[in-house]
Image 1: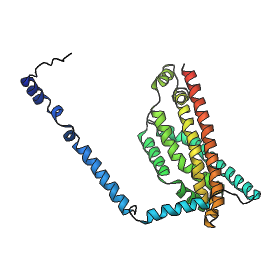
Image 2: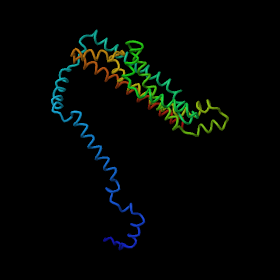
Image 3: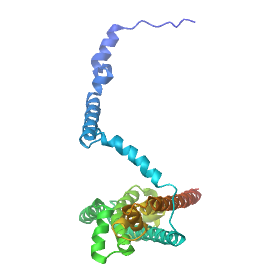
Image 4: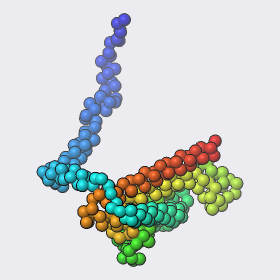
Length: 290
């Protein structure tokens, strides 16, 4: 069956072209700025790679050496049962640092987040100072905080807990405040309509809706901080990172491989547990909403 097309009215097309000229402009002309931005970013990427030595032949030589290094790490071996026990205790210390640092940051971050949330704090000065304080804490890397606290309280896991707590306090304050600002307004309006005050508005109107989100974020950061606790342990903040740095320094790569495997198993176990807890929180929240 042949399709019958109506003749195009040139006058109507000309009128449409005059009325909506931007529609008849070719796509590449409409997106000239975006295309130019992509070209500029691509040129910047190539320039950066060349400047930082990615085009250097040493990179290809290094890849071969990396393969030799992995061969030296096989098979993973702690050296002795006594040393394996020492590594396991250090791993437990690392997990404790990550857990305590994250939980302290979450507990302290909640009241600061309430001060930084626009729908809770009406005073602009308090809101501004709270936001800038969180930016300051978050702008300093956890490794720098570890070096600072080591000089304040000395070497050991206590400095590691304080470093993670200080760094995550800024992060949790920001994440929690954004969750509070994005919370549903209807429960708050219901509390206010029944004569509830400011504390009732926060306790019964805001927190029940955002606590599952906050708990999910805390669970993720416990997993993430397990890796961070390993890194700050290298600079003397306790945990298995100190042993990892020592074995790398003395070129005991089989011991290094064993420690890395321990860390990977621990992170995988924490990820599995946190996933189950997040699913449980989501399920309980759906039941409450139903």
